[in-house]
Amino acid sequence: MKRTFVDLHLRVNPKDAAATIQLLEKTETLGYRMVAIPTDPQISSDELRQLHNICKKAGLGFVSRVDLRPRTQNELLSLLRKCRRKFEIVCVLCENKEVARQAAKDRRVDLLNFPQIDYRERFFDAAEAELASSGLAALEFDAKPLLLLEGPARVRLLSCLRRELQVAQSFHVPIVVSSGVSDAMLLRKPREMAVLFSLVNLVGVCGLDAVSSNPLSIVKRNRQKLSSKFVAPGIRVVKKGMDCEES
Figure (cartoon, one colour):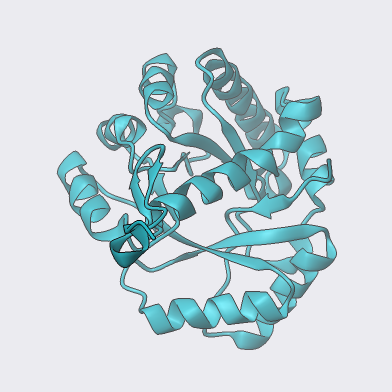
């Protein structure tokens, strides 16, 4: 079966139309069929519609995404109440342990992203993975740091990612590999992304799933939830009102 490749973390500046179009067109040329673009939580519906149209012209499906960077657990809960119904993907940038733990167990969170390069500031461990395994969150790895870092810093990050991957897999936490880039020169083909992350032992089918079926399943799940026909997991409105009357 042909894979649908997805980049859930393509960073663009909507105010720079030319650069945005160039980045999206190259993304499509490389073989992606769907992208998520992180936006401000306060973005308007019209602005989201504009991004959708730009992606459509480039031949890409558009997924709305918000990156939350809360400092406390209470701030995270407040942001989730405001944003969950507005965006198809909710990612939490985990910069302290309190936020990381709450994000992992909250079923409104789709992606856990640890943006820190220093392994001492990353908080994905067995306790985090166990919480995530009982929720719905996937662990997102961005390619950008691996493409830009050199020498000992890159080696240390690779070691950290290997450890996090091993923990995630032991608790069956899904892995999503995204680009995290805003520069067209840093874009890579989906299969090249999978090969890049073989450096952290994400190999074979698992690597390909991380750039295709894993992110795609999150998008499909959330689109169902955001549908007006959604009632609860496994329950949808098929007919209502007059349609339910017997003929």
